[in-house]
Length: 322
Image (tube, rainbow, N blue to C red):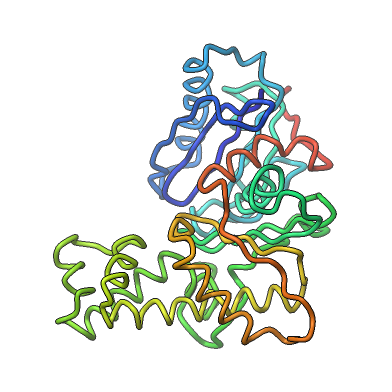
């Protein structure tokens, strides 16, 4: 058995994962951004013991613990170098957690973990190369090449959300302007919905805001399914921006498969089909086969399962304190 932890910008999930890659027990809690990392990691430790208690297992029965976290991580040292979405910098992730959880701990970027999970038992299973794009609070990306996570020589690869797709565009939390994350994340979709509702105050989209108090991916798509012109216009714009980043990924890497994950991936074909149509029009070379495109199969569990199985798919583990 293994433990997988997925630290996100809004929620942290922790699960006990069996050898068949099924989740045996799971708990989640709100990240509550802005808290000291020590508090978050203390909650992570408590969650690890909670899932063990729920399954009737002991820590010494666990082979390894894996953590996925947004941002750039040093896998060998077990540190978060920089994460703009949760405002962590030079955080000794493993050293801190091992004070409460004395196990071998592996860490990687959360989107890398999601990509690994989909590769092991999800949408990209059976491929040799894939890119998993996670559309959530930010935009993450995990690249699998030759059955291994590609992290670059310095562990800093795969920050695909910070490709600039609109020069001089919307400010990004990373400090640049026009990043893909500023246009393709759920945060960006909500921002654009606010703008559209203000522009069309008599639309169903604006009514959704008045009724619900705030936008989310689901109520925006619900308005579009009711043929609201403002919501349809908004989503056409959103699909365009998501497609622009995917086109860049295809032009550079030509992976066998592109997997779209994150909370909004639950919209299924309503999300996938228009993006695929845009991608077909925009790729550089239309004379060669396109990569397959699919919605993530593991949903929010991809990052947990991938984190649990980092051992064996990374060259190093952080062993401080063991």
